[in-house]
Image (cartoon, rainbow over all chains, first blue to last red; front, side, top):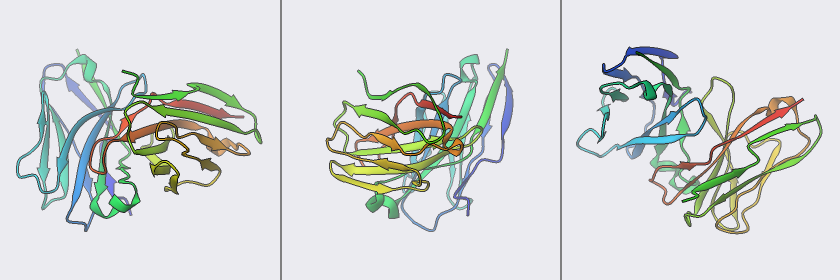
Amino acid sequence: AQKITQTQPGMFVQEKEAVTLDCTYDTSDPSYGLFWYKQPSSGEMIFLIYQGSYDQQNATEGRYSLNFQKARKSANLVISASQLGDSAMYFCAMREGRVYNQGGKLIFGQGTELSVKP
Amino acid sequence: NAGVTQTPKFRILKIGQSMTLQCTQDMNHNYMYWYRQDPGMGLKLIYYSVGAGITDKGEVPNGYNVSRSTTEDFPLRLELAAPSQTSVYFCASSYSLTGELFFGEGSRLTVL
């Protein structure tokens, strides 16, 4: 069963507008963490933001915020004031508490390719 | 700040050849991982290590081996390369079981 689902293979957004990238997850573990990574065309993986399952408030990091809806099991990434440099592949990932004895491995979704138009 | 360093960045192998992808980190992280990324896909875990001398299989370990003799180094060995192993390989490390992963720049491997 797919644990992390990103249903948008590709997205377009106009420069300076906000965009939401969808991520839903599946777990029965009450303790888990959700991560977003950015992968530009150069290929490196850049950590953007983290949300813990027990965190009361949505995580924010600069222009990035995470819209965490626990009951819906969704962790959407919101990018405000899009810039041309935001064009990249974006991956949602999850770490379940039960895998703490398995090295704390991350499970990744298939990614969403974001293109920012000037 | 070097972070996680992978070598080589690019490599072409013939079917049946073997090679080692090197990974070293200078952050004194205990947790290290090898992932592969196939075109248009997310990352899949090959092997991981929770410390020197301790390694374990991930989701797609077949055709690979690892070792962890030091905290810094986590090499990935490909034995008898097959076209299905054509992929981009990422090494990553983490300072804790809850922290984010720090990734190397990736190694693009083509098996012909």
